[in-house]
Amino acid sequence: MAGSFIFTAKVRFRSKSMNERPPFNFFDSLPAIAQIILLLLAMVLGLFIGQLAGLGLAELSGLGREMLSDPSWKPSDSFERTIYRSIALVGHLFTFLIPALLYARFLIRDHRRSYMQTNNRPQPWQLFYGSFWIIVAFPVAQYLYVLNQGIPLPKWATSLEDSTNELIQALLVMETPFEFLFTLFVMALVPAVGEEFIFRGLIQRFLEKGSQNSHIAILISATIFSAFHFQFEGFLPRLMLGLMLGYLFFWTRSLWVPIFVHFIYNGLQVAAAYFAPEAIGEAAENPDLSVETYQLILALGLTFLLGYYIRSRSQQLLNPPTNE
Image 1 (spheres, rainbow, N blue to C red):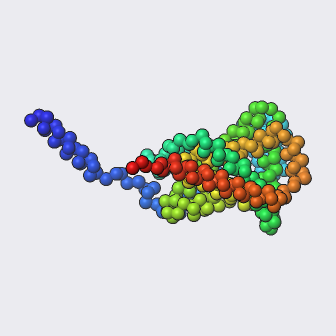
Image 2: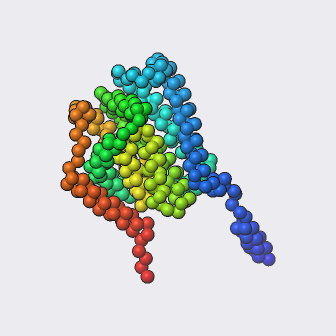
Image 3: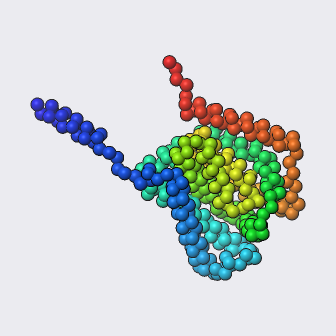
């Protein structure tokens, strides 16, 4: 009798628990456009906080906040470059990574890892072929950059582009192994994690849920990704990068794959500036951006074939054939 009573009580308790509704989640009720706007507002707020933190860091370092408001100022030694990289690091953390983590923690909440698909471990071959895919497509990106150069820009956009390029070139001056490793961290690793969390892990997922069309979600998130960098002369090649990263995320269903590939893409540029600064400087002074037709056709063909291979093999991994 006692055992029967306990069994009955357990059944009633389980039935009651199964009938209870899950707690209301405000995030689930928001349309995709509202989710994106809310996230962008969080990023703008983070940008403002990051700028204030950068000003504080400049004051504490003894350089003074005037240097940040002087467009002609450039870091002249290792100490100034380290401080400027630190300011860039703080700005990026507050603009991308921290808003992404807070948004996921307080709005997506308990299912944030499965939603952003950070719970799926990537396969080594996905990391290798994904990185190789980006390298193979470089002539295509170079051709798009040439096309982008032919688009007339307003004066304010050209001025912003020049100042941004000068800043990047100043940050890529590295004279010691420490500077190289710190630059690799600031300009390759942290942007890869923060930007992929924002643009693929959140915005692309918002759009996938809202539009029920993954291709549209990838295109829109890649467009936002390229536009948010405010480097208009590189909009088209960066759009292509965003598309490739978006499809890697869609095919593999692991956010760590585009994060790793994004890091490799950024890291190769940092490594080239450190190990071959003379070649990079010569290329900047006498740029030869033309791409031969056969190079473009070959790159397009290899990009398509390798992308098809990554997609097909990833689908087999996610949907293994069943033996009946």
